[in-house]
Image 1 (cartoon, rainbow, N blue to C red):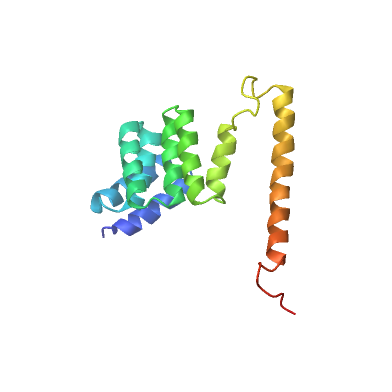
Image 2 (cartoon, rainbow, N blue to C red):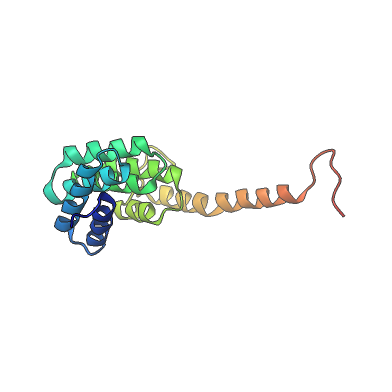
Length: 169
């Protein structure tokens, strides 16, 4: 009995979780060929085709099309990021992952990928390297103090009544 496209897709995800990339790619391919308009099938098949068979062009095309269909799905950005990494394009991977984080800042997979790639922000003192002690110090100070100051201001603002309103007793 032949499996449905959804069953093939679920099967592919199980193989992917077990790091059986060849079997996952074949299952995703069957799901995609059964329903070529499904963005989930596009994204996962494209990612596996690029990672397993080296079909980088196909992977980029399918993952990009999937993102265009459902742009707020963070796992599609992760899949396209993996395709860029398979193509040894670190800069492209970082760019795509950051776009995905705009839609889902708390996404664990995207954040882990960004850390793994070693993405860094631009140095505060632009004419010095990011590894310069001055830039390192300033980066530490700004990233640890400014977010706390912003949080404190937001808390204070929410406690005060607005102009013209009465405080609730």
